[in-house]
Image (cartoon, rainbow, N blue to C red; front, side, top):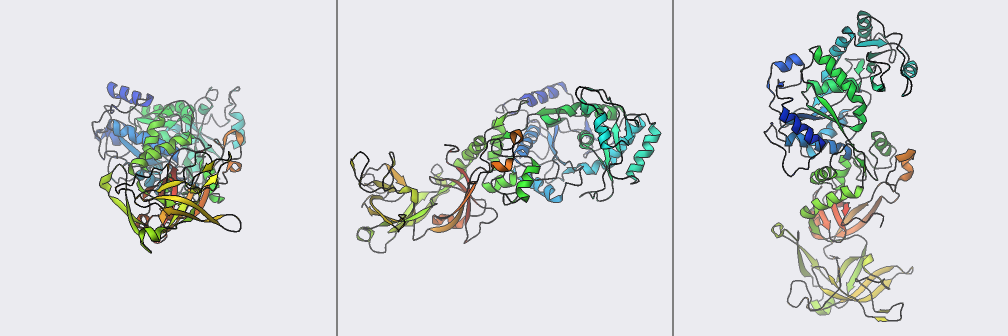
Length: 608
């Protein structure tokens, strides 16, 4: 977790360098922000001047808009911003960019707080600190807008949206000045206050920055910075009927919070000149402390086989294509958590994909590989039969005694004996996976099959296999129903071959299968999840992403699991031997009604 107070940490030697680390190292060496002061809370230049020298060497921020659930792309930004602050003796702020009241909700606020905590981070320099909110700065933003008007840097425009769009021009044609651009500051200030006081209809007018309608960067052609929007805000209620635009609010939020390095994704690169223009106007006017923050951009995460658009994720949820925001097939953090992903896997993924300024696609298998690595060392083992068919050991009564059960045991983890041992029974009847029996086996099949003649006319002896942690058995054959489906497999027990006993390896076998005894097996619902989309880039090139849904992304089976899993708690993670890594579902799993989700297979088999 990030330190609750700044430290004098430097970049750890094992951390791979990237352009952002190099920028921070240069700024620290040059003392770029060494003279800043921090009054203990966000504020304007006067407020911060009353504080002590800032104990944080750098300040970064994670500023989500609370209009949806965070996804794996946000996790990259979280790990980046909090990680840089941690590594360079700084502080990372959690701030809600809640400047759009129509789309925001406290449900999303709470989910974001929970997600950041789940990833192991604290914010704003203290344990359990209250996150910052852009809406808490609305008074200052309004003050800053009036300052720009009075300084001749902003005006109220009453053109229609269509007129503004046409007059803005395009990449080959400069914009045309608004007929309202030449108003005096006094006239503009009066109209802006009318906007504030609710005297005009939504959309009737906007406040625009006066910059350059002929700029090659269209974002500098007098961008709108305030609009009229009558909507109840989840934090400020109905206090305001005008709201700042994101591109105006965001730099101000950074400056009030003493942010040093404002790290954004590449789509904000063209907005950086306005960010700098606004910072210059407000620092030269004495409203904000100097030096101001600086914005840097990095490539966002493009992950195959998922969509990360909040609108498209919401469509999947509200059209009931998935069960909710926490559906384990979604790339939302609540979905990944329910799927069985760990914070350690997310951190490893973020570190492994690195930070660049070039867009690229990351294959979903990279994310799965990180989960596999973290669970391999932490998940305890268990046996489970996902497609059960009964195996009857026909000579059990003669060899072991009628009605007898034999005790078996296995380590909870093969590489961590200190974790202890799990215990289970074996008897005359056990459950095995249906795929472990073949009447006419293909080449390389070393599990259960009876004596038979192969396609070359060669006589093949019945197979001998070991029931893992138990005895060696020899296949006899199977009982089938009227449709030819196997209903029961028969085999004989080979005496004196129990694992761990003298002479147990006297009979050599090529095959080992997992099993669960009928006597103590536990019935469980197991959800086999696969990728939600069958197309690697389901929403690229104008495709309808809903047409790319994988019809086989979820299969629910009734499995039989070993008795140690009867005491599993929600979120407990296991390796079902031979099958993959599973997690006890954090919503539906309960005592007496176990539910397990497939987190990831033992190896990448997608498309193979």
